[in-house]
Image: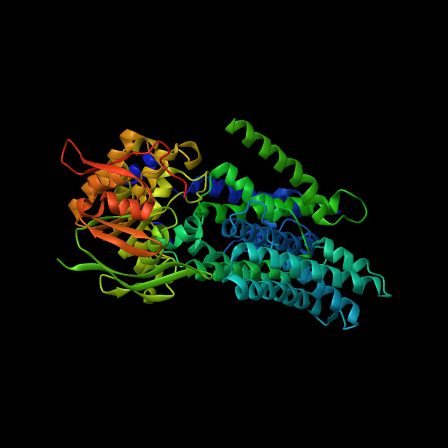
Amino acid sequence: MQQKNDGNDNNRQNLRVLIFPWRRFTIALIGSGICCLLAASVGSVSIDPITTLNITLSRLPFVDIAQTWPQSLDTILWNLRFPRVILALLVGASLSVAGATYQGLFRNPLADPYFIGVASGAALGATIVFLSGIPFATGNFSFLPVASFVGGISSVSIAYLIARKSTGTGLPTLILAGVAIGSFATAMTSVLMIRSEPDLRPLLSWIMGGFIRAKWSDSLFLLPYFTFGVILILAYSRILNSLQLDEEYATSIGVNVEKTKKILILVSTIITAAAVSFSGLIGFVGLVAPHVVRMLWGTDYRILIPMSAVIGGGFLVICDLIARTVVNPGEIPVGIVTAIFGAPFFIYLLIRKRSEIS
Amino acid sequence: MSTSVRLENIEFSYGKLPVIRGITTDFIDGELVSIVGPNGAGKTTLLKIISGLIQPAQGEVDILGEQIGQISSKERGKLICSVPQNPKLPSDMKLIDFVLLGRNAHLNLTRWESDQDIQKAMTAMRLTDIEELAQRNLGQISGGELQRGMLAMAITQESPVMLLDEPTSNLDLSHQSKVLNLISKMHNEKSRTTIMAIHDLTLAAQYSTRMILISEGVIFADGKPTEVLTESNIAATYGADVVIIPHPKGGSPVILPTSEDYPKVV
């Protein structure tokens, strides 16, 4: 996947093709890292960001920093804050990569990771487990993520099979089938909720999304899906560029359109379902982050995918920081924060883009 | 001379409507063939069948000995390139990036465009006279420039067989002959087989080594432009009264409508 940078670089520079913006990428990466440190430092016990950095570094192998801080800070950071910050980072990155992929695949700027029904399926899965009386968690193992993961994957699979049956995965059919399955799942979720006795607040807070229950094991579970998914999507990012042509044109330049669609839908659905199963349904980040990247750095998916991961991850870390500090005591669902901060920024970008064109 | 494209009894219908009703012909290396015929005769459909974009209901397409339905998309892309008619294109893609897409069949998941590939794209853009537009977005260039961009992309693909669907439909008078000169120059240099569907009979006659007149899904006439473009053939297929005179330079047939209400709506 390494781009070949040897040879006549000057030519590439002059033509401005395929130059990966390493400097900007590094700056964005460092920016996200700073977001993480900041988010870990702020809370009911405030920690000096430098101390946070030292504590973090001291955890790394081969780094020897004399401990000048109380052990309690280490415990707070390591057992409470970082699991949450890192999970937010991973979820934000996963949703943004999936969103960017769907936008490219469907050639639809409104596509987000939930475009073809992952979210409603995941919510239905979670609701069924929540109301069925199956213990929410036994020991360290929780059924809720498993159920929502299965629910999300199932609803997309059904939509995919319906679309394939009628048109060979015609994308408009897939979108419509996804909407239909999604509405059905949402209706079932509502029915189950209305007919139920128990207090629904835990379920509703899951559906609205948040990281309040974040554990290290959540990130560890998500990491392989994320890593594998992003590597595969990156490998396909060049082909994702060719899919911006219509399907016949893409076929005639030698793209196996059906196979590409199948792989990319599968991978994005899996990383979305994995992210959603721990964080609940966090909206907007998967829609906005890729657009922000697109407006700043152009439409080449080879740049768009990694940049979206970094920007989306950092954005969600900050949103989560706001979600847990803006009201005291308690917190608000992070999905509300992403929308409150994301929507105006998105509108600003749209207006700016508009004035550039005219 | 060897056969580069062979069509064996091709049939195709959209639903119950037959479009291609048994076409058999060979295209020889080095031929520049124009496929002509009235609207709805099946020109575009035939091109799509040759390029493997749609499967014929009956019959077989062979490109350089390979059955088009049996080989991978990438192999197909190496054998055959197409310039479609009015495709939907992303308006925010840069022209240079668009032309580079032509290299797709020569790349894979781990091999991206090398400097050589970029050179090839630039050469094609120089040939088609759009070099200075390289950094423009597709949404910011004219229809004619876009058409030359698509031609540049097809040249970049370096396939021995090139299909063009109405390559001059969006071009002004000077660019029509520029593009057709370029197509015929490319054709002569690389001895490709070039097959184009084209409306303008006079223009087609000036550049083609062979013309195929199709009507209602079958080949009505096939041969040199002077053999195919006769007053009776055109009356029988287009239902139009024309006079045909030799071009003062070169002598290719020039089609002139005779009646006042030409083109006649049938």
